Length: 89
Length: 519
Image (cartoon, rainbow over all chains, first blue to last red; front, side, top):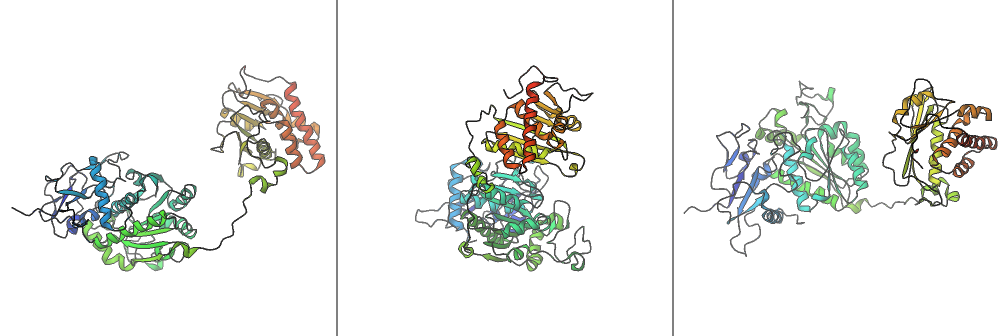
C-alpha cells in the first residue's frame, strides 16, 4: 500500500488563469498545467503527483484569491505538535 | 488569532473554515477525514464577485499579476487580526481601481493619487477604524506625490500599501516615476534617460527622511521567501495601525507580466534580477511610537460663540431656544441679485439671526468672476437639525433682487414656496404658477429713505414678515451689533420696518390659494 501524501492541493480550474507560478514554485514539483483547456481557453494548473507535502508555497505564489486550497494531513496523535506538517516558510 | 507566527495563524484559519464549509471546493479529497484545510480563500473576499460584469469567479487582473497576491496577503492579515468588519479600504485609480469588487469590507474609491488624503480624512473622522490606502506607482509616486508625502509627514494613523511595478500598467505601459534607468516604455522607447526623464523615485527612502512615519519597509514578490517577508511586513504595518501607533507604509515590488512582455515566471525572476538591485529591500523605519512623543501645547478649548465674542449677547447657548416659535424643521433660502446689492450680506445677517435663535445655520456664497457686474447669489440654510449639505438646489424662499435673478432661479423654487421680487410688479413674459410671488419695490423704498444701499434690508424686513421664519426683534439686535455707524443704523431700522409694513399693507400679486409653506 502506497504511503499517503502529507498534503493535498485542489485547484479550481475555472478560477485558475494558468499563469504557472505555482508550477514553478512547488518544491516537490507535484503541480503541472493540464493538457486540456478550461472554459476560458487556458490550461489550468492541477495537482498531479502524490508527493505533495502540504507546504502551502503554491498558495502564497498564486495571485487568485480562491484558486488554490491546500490541505494537510491531520496530526496523528494529540501529542503531536500543532502545525507539525506546516512549513517553516 | 493574534499570534505572529504563521503556524498558529494557519490553525486559526482551519478552525474558521471547518466551521463554515460553504466555501469548500467542489471536489474535496476523497479521504477528507484524514486531511484538514491549511490554506484557502480568505473570508475577506466575496464568494463571488457580483459587482463584476463578467467572469464573476476570477479577479480582473492579468495572469501572474502581483495585485491579486497583495490582495490575498492583506486579506489574510485582516482576517487574522479580526478586523474585517472594522476596515475601510481606499482604492486608487489604476489596475486596482476595482478592489471593491473583491474585498468584503468598507470601500471607498477616490480620485487619482488622492487616496492618502481621503484616508486621512476617513481615519480622523473614524479613528477606531482600520483605514487602508492601496495605491500603485503611477497613483502614489506621480500624480499623488504631494498627498503621500504630506500624509506621511503628518503621521496620519493609516496604512499605505504601495504596489510598485515601475510602469503605468492600466493605460498601456507609459513610463512611471519609478521606471528604472534604461527601461523601455511606450513613452521612453529608447530606455529611460536621466538627462531627459530624471532618476527613479525611491518612495520608501524618501518617506524615511520624514520624522513622523512609524514603519516603512520595501518587500518584493520575487519568490516564495520574499513573498513570506511581504506577508510579515503587511501584517506588521496593519498591527502598527491597530495599535494606534502612527503611519505605516509598505512598498511591494510587484510583477506586471503583460506590460513587461514576459511570462509570469520570467516576470517574477526579473524582479529578483533587475528591480531589487535598483530598489533594495529593507526596513527603512521601525520606530517605537513613544520615540515620537513630543510635549505639545494643547490649544485652549473654547466654544465658537466665545471665539466670535457673541457669548455675552447670547450666553453662548447654541441649543434650540424655545421662546422663538419656529414653525418649521428647516428653511432653505436662496438670495440672488447684482453684485453690490448686499446679497451676500443679507444671507450673513439671516444666519447670524438663526444662530442667535438657536438654529443650525449655513451660508454658502456663490460668487467669483460673476460678481463684477454679474449676478451673485448665496445659499442659506436654517434648520432645527444638523445640516447635511450647504447647497440649496430647491429653495423654499427665493429673494430675487433683480429680474435676471428671478428668471434664473424662479423655476428652482419648491411648489408652494415664496418668491420675493425686488420690483413694483412682475416683469412681462414671465409666469410663475408654482410659487407665491410677492413684488416689493425695495430699491425705490430704500431710495426714498435715503440710500438704495439698504434695499437688501427692506427685503429682509419683507422676508421676515412674509415667512415669519425668524423674529424681527432678533434682526434688530443683529443690526445693532453689526452696524457701527449710528446714522446707517437708523437708516437700516427704517428700511427694516418699511419692508415689514409693505407686506402688511399690500396684497399679494399672482398668489396661489395655498399655504405659503410656513404657516
